Image 1 (cartoon, rainbow, N blue to C red):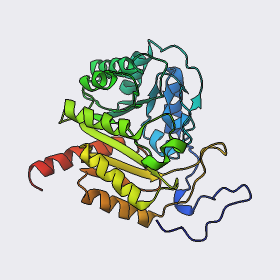
Image 2: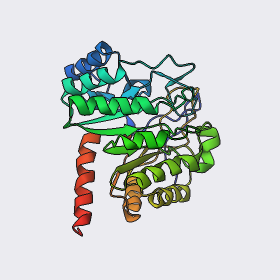
Image 3: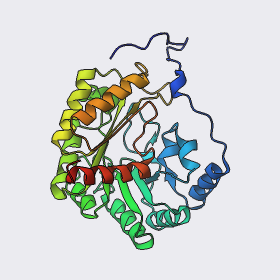
Image 4: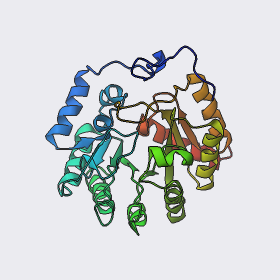
Length: 307
């Protein structure tokens, strides 16, 4: 990937954000109403914990990605702003509260993610199932997308969650395998890849999804190889977005990838056979997830018809 011109580090060594990555602070009444609902129901969101740049736009539409199993992660990935430490006990009321939020927001599609819970025997798999079942009980028309941790060294966890039949099973590879030791040290690239392959083997009809960040120092050939690996695992939907450094303690941004380069990555991914690709500087896993799910289903139907 060619370097972006005219973007130089500041005195602290950080690259200033280019114009295409800047967003306005959220101010809409709908944003504050969504935030109040999350507080009232004691729900955490990855939107806040991960400092997502799209929070104002998504919450203005009542679309919040709920983060279950608490707000404290047992890992310390170099890209992630979620706090690390010893988590609290699993909240037994969390599935009920999540179902209430889905009903109050009148969501057609909901995204559920979580922190890593290496301290739990099943990695939190049972809580994912409880949340899925609670939503299906109170809002049967709502489609459900889950974004899970890797369940590393948690035998049977992947199978348990897949058996609950979410509409989309997402697990992000995040970066290229060469960067795992520095960016995602607690994870294993081929285990994450195997997770996605396992889900497809359990239910070939379930949509699978994965995401990548760019701007961490990866090479274009490495990104293309990850695309090939994901297609070999049968993944349907790929998201690619710009990595943004949450704090000076996190991994620095190596470079800002231009919108034209994202367009080229999207074209390449479609050429490799993904049903749907979302690639832009501000793309995140659950950004416009409801709209993307509709597009995903339409793409599958078109493919069946030979379109």
